[in-house]
Length: 213
Image (cartoon, rainbow, N blue to C red; front, side):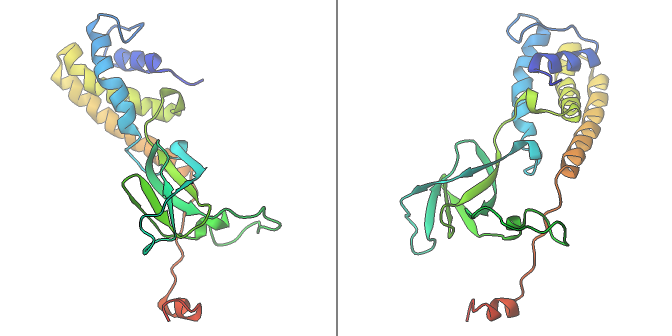
């Protein structure tokens, strides 16, 4: 069961013994402070880590006129909701064989660290028909896991505690709980993603490929 924003706000309010709300637009002080902090907190949580699996998206990029042709082969438009570009992948044919196991990460195409740069809402790279793996901006309450919901509600409770309860000691205690909940959530999210190892390529190996010669 995924919580909505009002559910999470009410759980935060309950943790500081404050009254519940039915809407963020009602006239209570609880609703006013939740309206002030809740959505900005969701947006901020998306920036707590650039590697959250729940925010990962991938899309085939739309090509633009290349205004840096002396530096890069292709220029693409960044997706409107892109917060952090992670990987550039090639468009490949369907696999006819893939290993079952090995010392590397999967998929194997993620082993290739294709070079790219971003400037003024454009992405430049040397990959034709490039696929961008990226972390999207912003977060919805329904996207949060149980631990993510807990991190949200404790952090919101810490932020609304003093305006609502006028209790500095309680606010400080909730801030400590929030810090622990945040670390637990980020650790759990990190454990959901296999480690991405970047293979080191020596100058000698590049030379054998004829690169830089």
